[in-house]
Length: 249
Image (cartoon, rainbow, N blue to C red; front, side):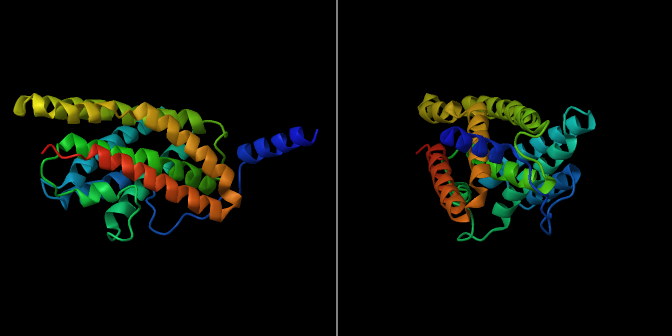
């Protein structure tokens, strides 16, 4: 019974909600506020700034989420809206961070933002990679903690999947539009890069991020292990982004 009791305790730990924690200063209060912040970021970026290509995609995603909230498309709208603002906050932190204070997950995109020989779709997908694979599991845990929920609370996983369906929808629209434009301008020599970018999957990233969130939830009682895990996650996500940002020449 010893091993069974241990399993039961671990399962209860994963499933148990927590007491709500305070919302940090500066966190947006609503999806419309996030939209406004993203618009301000975009307005400050030049037309050739690679970060701007991701920002435009993310703004569209956030606007779509706002539309679905207004249409009552979520089981737990309070969770969903909080997840959206916490999730966006991690990207906005990366925008505002100094070069040496930015997460390794975001470093490749910001280091390459002015690079030549890169396609707009590469910047967009590299940003999606950093935001989903690194930021989303962190945002999921933070949102649950702020609201006193757990990953198993009603509506949490369902709405997580719904918001990521929006990400996938917009990602495919943007990817196709950017690739169509590129294919009209460039020849077959870029096909290896297009194949690389096309192989990145929102659905796989989403599923992996959910598993990462469950691990982070389990590690909450050990700050040291959490930091080690997050450092490793940021490094591995950053490595993928570097591969996505391979120059054409």
